[in-house]
Length: 123
Image (cartoon, rainbow, N blue to C red; front, side):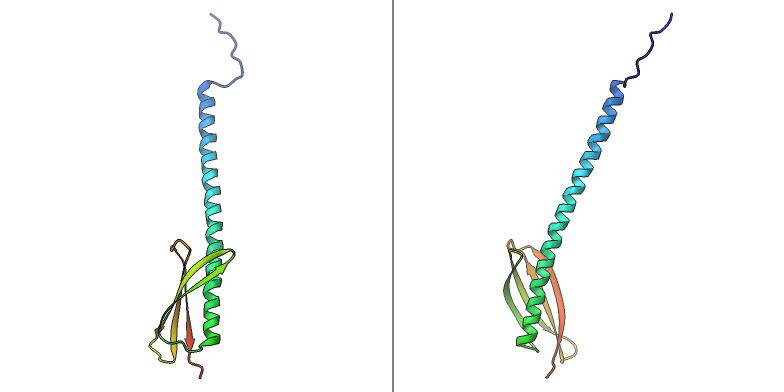
């Protein structure tokens, strides 16, 4: 008995395996693209929050070179977004210096950034 010559196509199993590989690759690509978009948004938000905190530090240095110990809320708008913040001034072991912490939250109240600096008594 002689067999009929086999045509040069793919079997159903080979086609299904190829489709599974393509589907997994596309899924991984979509996940990576989503992660890049989220990271870009997070970076934009963190940069704007850092500008808010640094603006508050600069304002504090210009208006009160040696701030009193305590806590004060503030608001800030950067890149069309509103941020809520808190400036916390605390003592240090050296009485000539104060630690100033700025905590920045987005409009939903989620923490975005915390930034600290040291201010000295320059009198």
